[in-house]
Image (tube, rainbow, N blue to C red; front, side, top):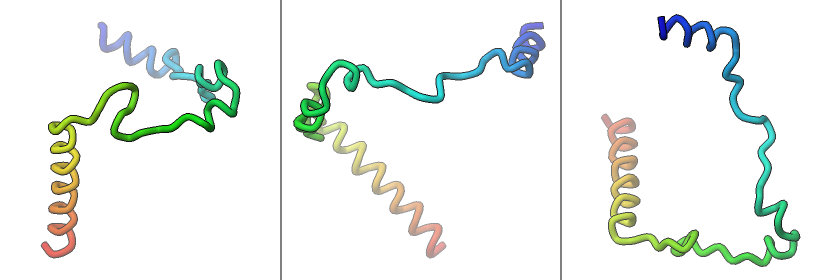
Length: 75
């Protein structure tokens, strides 16, 4: 019953998704020169710093990707 209703709604395209064009509140709020002058520090983004656990996860993901690529290439 619920599955049939959900399937009907999906087939009817009631859930059409988000807008095709997105708008930025920052671009609407500030002039272009302020946005160009903004300094983006990858270590301090949105007031958060990348901690040791985050760095470990980055290195681990790179290591897993490397291992997968090596297995794909050499077997």
